[in-house]
Image (cartoon, rainbow, N blue to C red; front, side):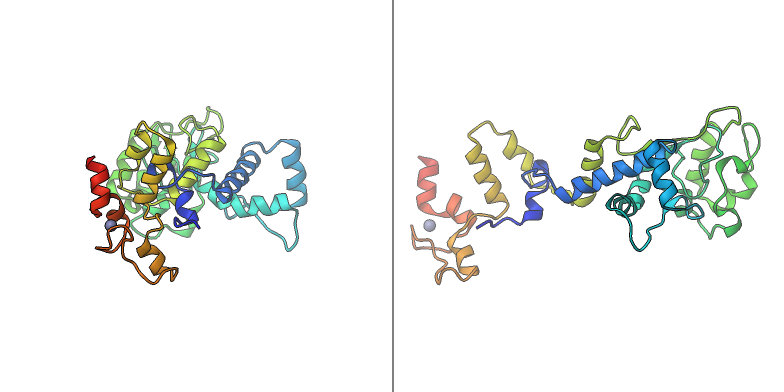
Length: 270
Ligand SMILES: [Zn+2]
């Protein structure tokens, strides 16, 4: 009988779990890899074959459209596309592909500008690309967007190099990875971070301790409240008494068996 819930066991060791692979997240990461390849290599043969068979919604920002029946691969793409896109930032070069409001492109901001806007962005400019907000090289058309953004966003935009027509196309950057290249490991770890609530318990001290693995696992069980004490057995209707069967003096919970029971204390203190 496992007294520690499976979702807890899946957490990382430093966050209260045992670091088992979460296969749902692994599948999610593989799905995002397919989406990333599809997004960044539009001239690959397999992408051209898919693009000829299925359709994208260009208005909504190149979203794949899921028909009533499709292949498992396309279903995987449709399921993971939005998750993939939330992890894509852009390096602006000529500014002709990055959408000013809807993409993440300002260094230092983890959100698209539309989510920081202080008032409603007019529909007429919602899909505009970054280059359309330039008057001339190095000069932003401030009056067309300044009134919609908070001052910190304005300062960050003013601090970056503006788009230049003579440069290459804008490049996508994979946020979970510091190099900007897609890797399954960084994607999986990023998904784990989104899933887990950060725990302040001293888990790392358990795993850092130099000693037998079974003692470390026992300490982990104690801290996870996963030891089958009589109090726990009683709570699960497996026993009628919750009293310690060694000293018969108190309720036998985790703290009792490792510290409060006088027999345990005799062992601890030698
Ligand atoms: Zn006792």
